[in-house]
Length: 240
Picture 1 (spheres, rainbow, N blue to C red):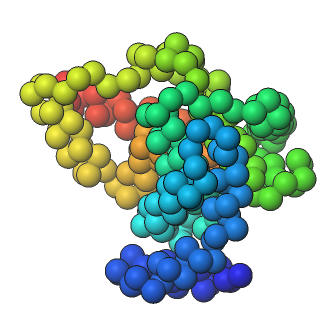
Picture 2 (cartoon, helix red, strand yellow; picture 1 turned 90 degrees about the vertical axis):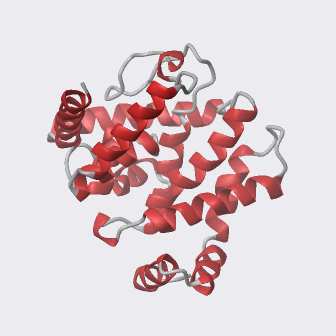
């Protein structure tokens, strides 16, 4: 197993296009990839295909990872890897989450809420993992898996999500106006300070909750909520 320092060094090299560094990172995260892939077996997709998707998710995680996040690479990578598989399976059909995972995820969310009320901040991934006797990557996976939609009429389960149904959040067919809006939005996001860009990217492009983003950025969920609200409000004003 690579140490954190070695992992960070290979990630830096991989970002510069070092194919050997990418291969080493993939090889040393094989067990992590397999553990995630196993969760999706028996849903109509072959193991080899799932493993390839997991590898693609890992490579995206390598490109998006920043040492300044202050978290282990595996903790950051898990939602990226699972997200790659979930996106594929959502396109191919509905994804069902096991009752055991749903049950554990609900218990974790209860723990997070109770902890937040008691201490004024959400627990860290490490604290959640310790509470439930699992690895940090497993805790992230369970919380992420519970957010997979099985119906276009299903609403978000987390307190920091809005209550709109998935149908309301699906993009409309592209037309010229949509294209212009997307270009304006891309420009507005690019103009944001680095930390704010990361928050928007993780929230809206990596489908992470405010609590998960808070853990990655290293601030409280309340701060993420305030920053996100301010950014969204400013963008609405800019875009009209």
